[in-house]
Image (cartoon, rainbow, N blue to C red):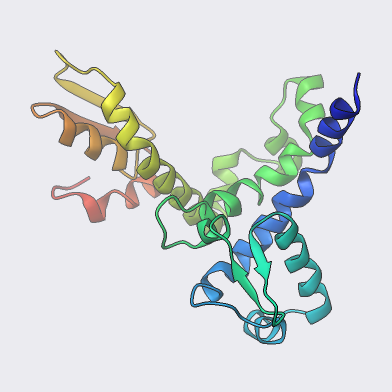
Length: 215
């Protein structure tokens, strides 16, 4: 064992803090508020309706993580990494940050031990229902989940289209592919293929704006 081993494991222990800093920045839309350039703390506190001293501590954490810088005038601005918390940039991680560090994932991850000991779903244990049932009862979280899936698909599609050899295939089925981004990319890259998407009704809602025929 070395000091490096100790430091590495301690980083793992405290990684929950960066995750929640990132999620809080995303929840407060701070990246969008800083998209136009540096903004002083006082103005950010007003824009976000936050307690100024507490917001200062959050921003200090974001500076430590390399997401923001505090300039000589004391105003805050985005780094290149911080830009990725904007919803309108290529490669945005805003929706994954909100989804993966939010509910039901966050509380369920705190009960991994329960799953390991019993084999039962941590989400079921914490919330009394499955992930999809919980999302169905919370429209805002459900919309965020499908938005997260859409953004992930957009980023993954080019590589998948290049790497998948579909020569000789005629029909493609995407189970759980409601947003249609992956299917659209595969069909565009493989003329002659026909595609079918299966998903829950809420998932297919995100398909319809892209589809020229009924979903």
